[in-house]
Image 1 (cartoon, rainbow, N blue to C red):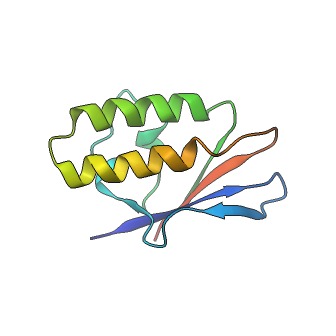
Image 2: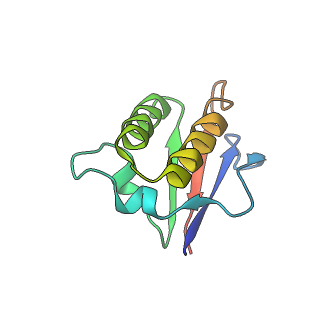
Image 3: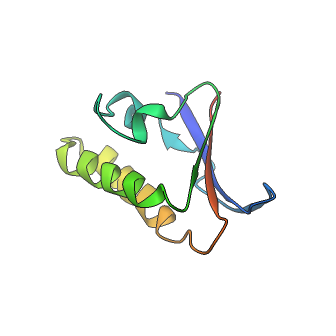
Length: 100
């Protein structure tokens, strides 16, 4: 199964923290609602960056997806993604998704 790397970066692009070595499950992106503001734009084959102003929308969309996901293991994975995103704080912080 394909995964997408995720990391917290400084404004200079330096990695502050990396999510799980296996990255996020691509099903998160595949199941993004067509009207989502963030999730549907994560590129499984390229890089996608969100800034600190976009993070609340990303978190909200992930919470909605978690609540609508029937598979327990995927729900648990989304919880870990949310826990990581909740550690991202401060000005000029970014979350980068790195596709294949």
